[in-house]
Image 1: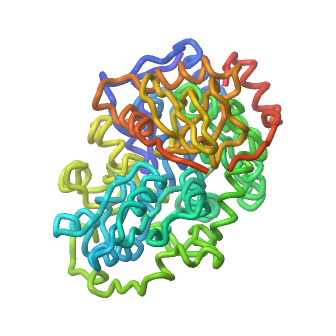
Image 2: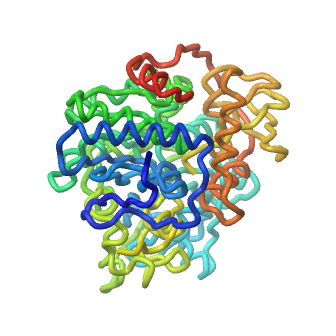
Length: 388
Length: 119
């Protein structure tokens, strides 16, 4: 039987995620949840190690883990952290500066809501919107195209997200958008970042729980190469709390057995090959380029940029973007932000002095407190600062 | 924004479908769906695009799972993200056909069977 009160150690050994207290929700099937927790306990007991480090790479996983209090169901010694699973959070400040510069020059910027408050070097899109720039929040790439169809102004879709969101961006680019529509891509591709994080000595990941939704597009077969490169097992898991626990049990078994292999614990949605039509759309339009992931590392081939054939829709080609006015700043709170360390799995939100103090969802300092997929915001929403 | 939400297709017009999400009707694009979709099918919508046709055998369980994740009151963050997805639908354009068996990864499935976990 699991012990819902027990709190296993986090990356720093003394923190475990938000203390959800009375907010813990009932499982759809508590017996299954307990059976899974028991199985996890047996597996960890058989490992004879002080700590097993599991990293997931998806904000929706973290939401489910925090909302249902899953960390408290895991055996002691299991350290479950979120890695670089928030595309908005890993968008580098110079990328935000480009959107800010375009907005300030009088172009219309359309972007997902999460991007609005992400700090650039000296300003966010929300700052320049307050100063009169035309910045629109859209739910879909298709909406950005509709805005362009209704105006003569240049409309730049500042696009963010992983594969699941990049495929729709590719689809609108391929369906003859109006001439005044262009895309400033901050889309990211996760697997190379997982490889970089796996190689970080201070992160020391024993296994990855991969995001089932991105894998719906890419297929689980994609991870075979990564497993080979990193010698680290990967299990694809779903998001519903029992799916997450089931994925963790499958992964823990491979960690126990020293089996560096890919497993699919989410066969309901994920196939080996994934969604081919979506992949075709994605890779027809995008290619990868190396670049900085904010605060984490320079990641090879993990930024999705438009191919030359689509240069006419690429805001970087269409405009001579001058960010010099926005690219410098005096000392600020954001210098103290440890969002990068959190996204790399080197620190917890609660390791940050500003968490819940100077930095809150209402007045965020760093991107991890802005996005609903950011670790800091999720921990804050589901319990604030845990009691230590 | 990562999760997507399931809904039922009520009408298909080329590469656009009308989809019903718990009573909220929205347009969803079919450019990125994995299989051809017709009226009555359920799809998984992500930012206004269908990314998967949900096989008939999985519809009930999928809906139940999402309903359980949407619990927790109006201010709940996960619920809010899912509701945002419901709002996320819109307009039109190519789909292909891929008919695939679920992944092999047989060992994982065996273990899940043993634990009586229907995923």
